[in-house]
Image 1 (spheres, rainbow, N blue to C red):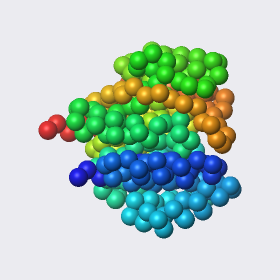
Image 2 (cartoon, rainbow, N blue to C red):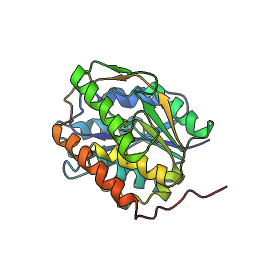
Image 3 (spheres, rainbow, N blue to C red):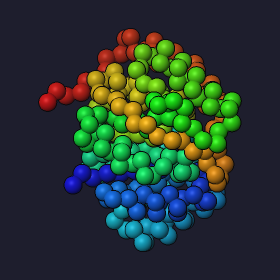
Image 4 (spheres, rainbow, N blue to C red):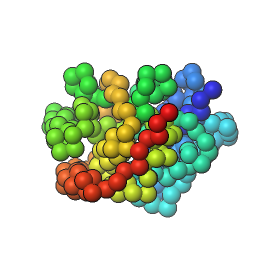
Length: 247
């Protein structure tokens, strides 16, 4: 059976963390979870550690010393998952904006439908976002349009953060060269995988804005994405990307 690891970065998610863990473990297919916690002062890590006693072979935690950014949290999680030998590694938010029941669909896209990276897409079949203010919906939607224009990616939801990777992708793309820490991290990962010759496939999802806890999104995160995408694209013209191994 394929081994599957779900990475869940956390900062002050005490309202959500136990529910999201139990929801993932209620799925068929034996998913494991690594929580990457950035020293949450609300006690998120303590909740995870208590649950680890209930799920000793499936739930793990990586505690960091401060709020170091989404991108570095995922990079740490990727490296941990590769070291432990997982075949498929997922990115997912803790706040139920990503529905855990979509995890098997992302896995199926990689395991059975030819994808190397499966993307939970809000925009592949219209605009499937619930409970976001219209301004944020428009900002996200047109940010994806902008990224497509600059990078040439043929993806409707370029900024999506709900994904499944085959381990070969993460072994190939030189994780230490991923430079963005915030919103643009998701763009850079997709662009790098694409440049390395991997197949990206969008899976339609419905994105529901968090009901509990506080959003970590800020204007500075969008600013990083806007200017950073152009820099990334310019550097790509001279960078030599490692390529997917042919079978």
